[in-house]
Amino acid sequence: MRIVDLIQRKRDGGELSRDEVDFLLKGAVSGEIPEYQAAAMLMAVFFSGLTEQETVDWTESMLSLAPALDLSSLPGPKIGKHSTGGVGDKTSLIVGPLVAAAGVTVPMIVGRGLAHTGGTLDKIESIPGFNSRLTNQELKTVLKNVGLALIGPSAELTPGDHKLYPLRDATATVESIPLLVSSILSTKLAEGTDGVVLDVKTGSGALLKKMTDSRRLAQTLVTVAKRLGKKVVGVVTDMDQPLGNAVGNALEVMEAVETLRGNGPADLVELSLELGARMLLLAHPDRTVESTKEQLFKLLNDGAALQKFRQVIEVQGGNPQVIDSFELFPTASAEFVVSSPRAGFVSRISADDIGQAAMLLGAGRDRMDSKIDPAVGIVLEHKVGDRIQAGERLCTMYYNEETRVEDAAQMVEDAFRISSAAPEARPLIYEVIQ
Image (cartoon, rainbow, N blue to C red; front, side):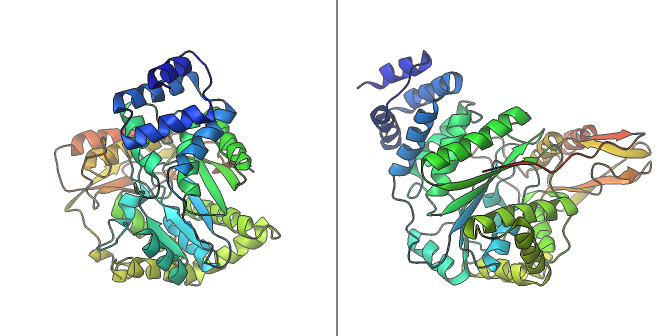
């Protein structure tokens, strides 16, 4: 078979067989199919889509490119978690230790951020000495000893996504729902999990900004996972304003630690407990949402989850003293305060604008090879619904380079809307699909 024929058929809305999908993906990963033709196929899929069967085939084929982790030697259920990305989303750093402290094994392959969306891998690498590059055997050892591991994707474990994700980014095809589904599921199922909870964001700071698209993604993820015989729960959550208060890598790890101390922002705590409870329910389906949340709330406030985070930092080569001494994190050299121009209520905070401003400061990347400054970012002093006085601090920007501070400050000011009346409350969690 010829790749050009497959591209043409998909371009014209035709359907690919499993053998043809295998031929395409194996050739793309091995290099036998050149990147320009693989990119052309991604664009054809973006415009023509994949049928449900094609999406199942594409996902299975991605999984077949390398053996999934065999965690059968570890006792008990293994449950994963994934987010489609957002601004200030550090829930993996909270949910992972929480659920592991509850006795469930949690393997986590975490990714880098791009543009306005932060990546958990960038966050954990702001911890001095933290090693996110473990061999499969080292990963199993960490999981056996701690019950939680945080690692980056690799060509060894996820060769298909390792090859295709940069191409999807370079060709503006990341938002394709079938490609998202195959990418997410192939990566999470490669972890050797028994089930996965997927946090699908919607709103200005999300990859998919419309509720209809986010719901469709969640539903497709669950449907395809069922076809593959896997347990997956999709939780559609709000990303119209940043999650929590901190945006920026080291700043977000600090906020995660404070949350594990029982001092986290209300929205971050609420979402972490919801996602953690759904993970526990996958492990123990005989329980209720209320009972699992009660258990996790206790672990969040008695220090057990924080101790679990300390353990995983230490066993993966990081300095566990950062838990007690935030000055050990990278620190920005300067700050800029953005104040409210008038009194009123905070009626909107554009997550997209806040994320873009943080990127200008160096907290994010506009290309995969851009260098991240782990110290910089933005800390919000107010959230949507708060009453505020004229001249009161809206947020603080932390930076090292002055070059783009003015542009970032303008973007932050534009992100906030101050109104005379309090806005209607909007839910943080829209829907649970299973």
